[in-house]
Length: 137
Image (cartoon, rainbow, N blue to C red; front, top):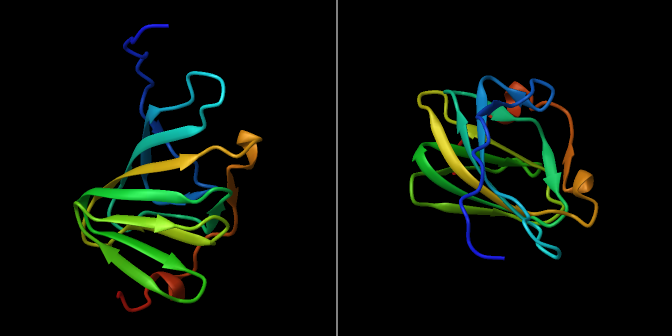
């Protein structure tokens, strides 16, 4: 098989069951051949929009391309990341991420599919206001 341009996938709005506020995703890469598991997407968050709590079977790498990103974990830490910074979320770690209230935010999300792709991400409950408003580190 030789190189080729892949078909463009339309921008999709992420579902309210898993996201609060307006969040859009543009797929960039997905498995093309047997044995490949890499998934990459550009995700854009309106100010204050964020994911629900979730975890990934094989971890997730997020590279911030614009705006101010917030990343929270169950231990109460909330870190702030700026364009050019990359955050790694370990396998199985329950976390959330989204845009700071004052700005749009975009990141590139990179992860490996689980053996069963339906088990790649485990979605949990929405994040409450107390967790969203913790001091940023």
